[in-house]
Image (cartoon, rainbow, N blue to C red; front, side, top):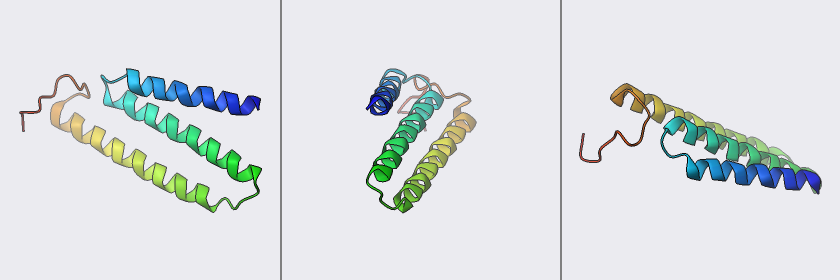
Length: 95
């Protein structure tokens, strides 16, 4: 029970950081990866509790790695195009 409360507190801390930190793309991506890691822990504990196969955990890790790679490629593309990862310096009317 204590482990579940710890995981729940970590999950809500990750969501709080994600919703409050909107200036840099890198901190947003890091908080998303933290949330995915906590979801992985929840899924792993749930599947172990009921003695299910852990094949779905491998699929979940594959999709989370693809999500992380996509976010990092967007970050590199934005830094190469604009020079930084501040959201307030971008204009929607610029090409």
